[in-house]
Image (tube, rainbow, N blue to C red; front, side):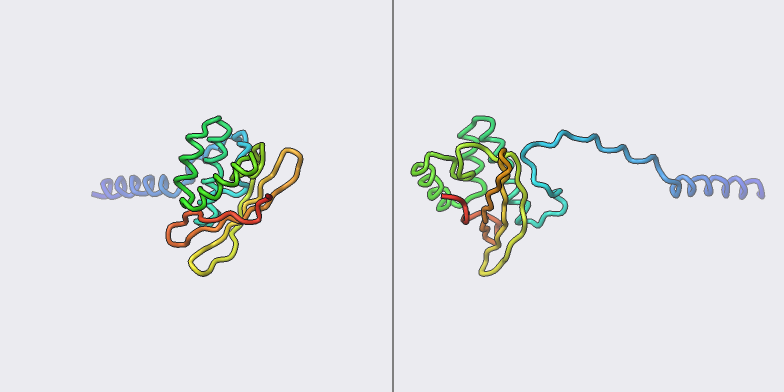
Length: 157
């Protein structure tokens, strides 16, 4: 009986030691080549509104870089209101440039910062960075209930 208790205690101790012992060190994440179009923040630190704008901008930029106007339009349709899309279409027609980037070319990177909220909306400042080192700040306004983007402000004309 004593041997049984000793054996049981030993098994229990080894099991407990296995649970408490540190496991293998997590593998270091491979240093991923940074995509040119990533917000500087990790998604885990973004507010829902920041994440929505960052995701829209990333998907839209990827579609434009892929040379797929239909895909770019589908991204706009998913994230922007019909009214904003109509205004962006008019802007593109008037200026002969991309209506989201407000330029002929594509920004190399961007970052997002949460802005103010009120009256059913919130704003996110997206700062586009360009090859020449210049930046363009654009305020994205989102409806709070569904985080659909319904306006872009402060974009160059």
